[in-house]
Length: 154
Image (cartoon, rainbow, N blue to C red; front, side, top):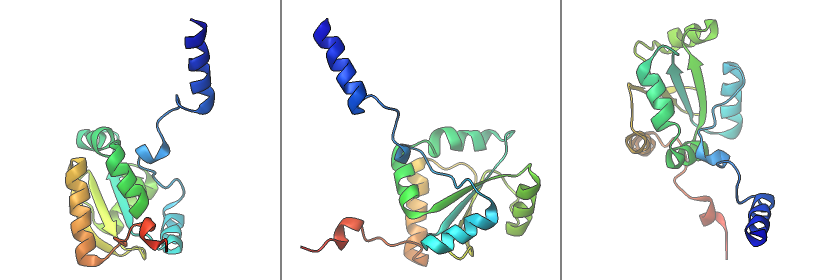
């Protein structure tokens, strides 16, 4: 009993029992839209803009099934800067008009300068979304396919 308790305490202290790592969730940019665009330019990262609404069933499904997928989250966090737009807010309505978004959910894919490359309308499963984004990258060269480990010289 004491050994089990000691083992459990040591695992807790060492961090073995912690919450899921941040890379297991999509990191949505928390600032304003204008700051989001500035940050994309600064980081030289392409953008994803997720248009959603609280009343939208498929939007909730995207949050629960797609954006919560750890593999997709790692891919998105590494390659994109991601912003979530509530279409029912005043700022959100302005951004909806700017991109002429008519259906929800919609993901606008853009280059690091904020230029729209594609609009992905409706629900996407995690693997399918990743495949679409990889195809867009092949066509538009949004992000580098070279993994960081390859930069290390022997």
